[in-house]
Image (cartoon, rainbow, N blue to C red; front, side):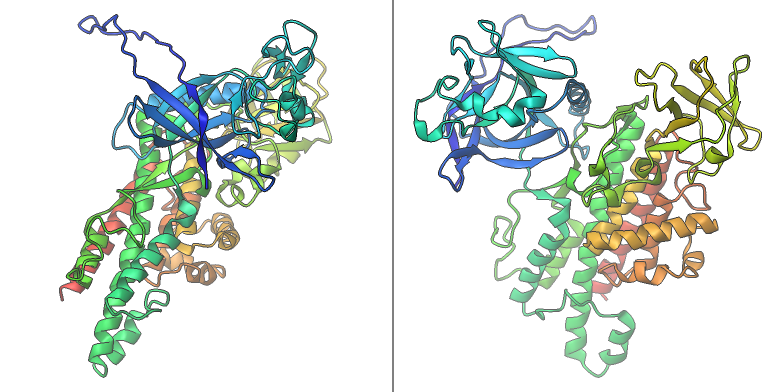
Length: 588
């Protein structure tokens, strides 16, 4: 079982003064909060102490910790720390994420995970003996290691000798930091070279609320909880797993009154579970609409593993603080709770790739972007973020009016050039001659650009980079909605194929047009609930298509919060429709 470390990481004492209006004032006195942090740890198979990791991403990981104020009981927290091998570019992204989170944490009742604190940690290593220490120089042992910046990476150095450990070599030389010379905690030979780096160099870390339930497990867990309550009230064990068709129920209802009542109740439970899924997406879309509109922030990394769920109190099948398992609580009470009293909030996390107002290049540049966790939620422009294009003839630039004729190779791309796209030379490593498309003229034949075109016009091989704007977030929300409804990540590929087909055929996004597409029945059938399937898919496809009648976004470069607002309005209408149906059916 995990135990807290004996060594606490004290919060850095720092204060920052912000510009205040003339009528405001701030006290010059400070108050000692006695705020302390500790990392939780557990023993591995070899009997050594290691930190408890909650998860990790491309450039950071999240460790489990404890926050304690004075002698009060400790609070479990999540501490986000950059990987030891993180580059200076990753640090800049991390600093941007901290700035975003600070800006977002000043608003209440918005579905974004708030930060609790930002700390600056020194280099820390967890010894196998269970103590955390700042490593000394493993070469001379005279001084504690300090930070040094080396080209694209930070590193550790000794001021007394020539020892240097760059971040890009830390994975090969990690044992040096837990050698007998480097350790300041013990000299036990059994833990020689077997420590775990918690924080490599002096860096900021983010302290967040510790949430344990992600969107991936939300639907399964809620179904299990509701089935447990249902069975205790005499319901069928498979009633919620296999929802009945309403037409079939009506035909047998007159013959089997008792069975009809039970089936009708199971149908209501299934609708109530669907209502919770729709509510979860209402909260997500509301959060994104707030980001796009109020804060002008594009998340750019909406995926199932970046959404957490917070329940009111501890919510599981054994919890009874609400009296959920009291004998006098009947089926109608359970349904009333499910339908009228939401007990959870979905929260957006991980703003490491977010942009504010002006898009940047911060996006995936490796194969991880197409993996199982990210790939199902990537828009076409994200999947083709960087596209290498070979040309038969070099681009011919007109220096006077800053235009060039778009060659056939570029006109034939699946995603044609649009304003905001960047064109760079494959050999221009310093990006001196990056060109930004300002307008596409003459029916897509000529592009107007800003930037400095190369003097030697041998642009035979270039890279087209596409910005990820608000429509990318809307696309991801549509895919997340479908994942929540199907509860199966393997069902996402047919959905993407249906979106592509609808986009190619230029069909309006409504039930009548979609039913004529071959892929539609399979995509529809994958939704677990048998109710409102057509309406649900229409909303999803309106989020994932562009420029079609009914689509929320006109193009992939739409700016502003209008697509999110349209999405929010429509899904709230469906939520109200389902809610009214449940209430009216139950009291018939």
